[in-house]
Image (cartoon, rainbow, N blue to C red; front, side):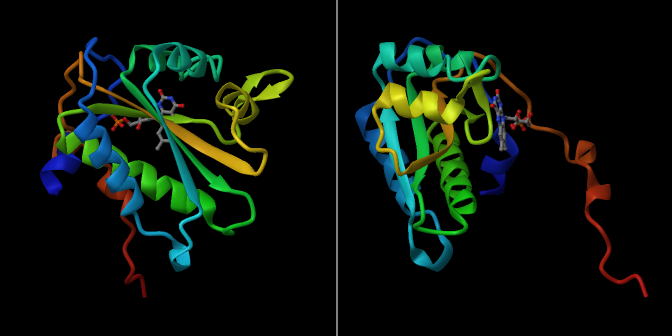
Length: 173
Ligand SMILES: Cc1cc2nc3c(=O)[nH]c(=O)nc-3n(C[C@H](O)[C@H](O)[C@H](O)COP(=O)(O)O)c2cc1C
C-alpha cells in the first residue's frame, strides 16, 4: 500500500490506448468499496469512455480540465442531494480510492475539481457537467477523475521532501 502511495502522482498526459473493460470493472468495484459516513453511500458514479463526451467534459472549466480530452476514461463522482450531510467527504474518499486502485493497475489519473468551480461567468462547472451528461437535477457533482495509460513519468517525492513540519506535536504542555 505504501508503495502505491509513494508512486501516485497526478498524471495529465495519456497514451492513446483504451483501458481494458476488466480494469474499468475493478475501478467501479474500488469505488463501491469506499467507506462512507453511516454507510449511507450517497455517491453515484458515471464512467465515461466515449471520446466526444470526454471532449465536452474537458471544457467543464477554463483551466484544469482540458487534459480530460486525452484520457481514456473520466469517472464522474457525484452524490444525491440530501442523502448525507458529509457527501463531500464520502465522494472524496471514493475518488482517492479509485485513484489508488488505478495506480495499482498501471493507470495514471488526475482529480478535476468540479464542485465550487465555474464553467463560465454565467454557469457553474457542476451545471455544465450535469447538462453534458443529462444527469438528474438532484445530483451534486464533486469531481471527475481522469484515467489513462501514462504518457509522462513523474518521480515519487523523496521522503525528505515531504512537509514534515505539517505534522504538529500533540504534547505541548
Ligand atoms: C481536491 C483536489 C482538487 C484538484 N483539482 C484539480 C484540477 O481541477 N485540475 C488539475 O489538473 N489537478 C487538480 N488536482 C490535482 C492537484 O493539483 C495535485 O494533486 C497536486 O498538485 C499534488 O500533485 P500530485 O498529485 O502529483 O502529488 C486536485 C487535487 C485535489 C486533491
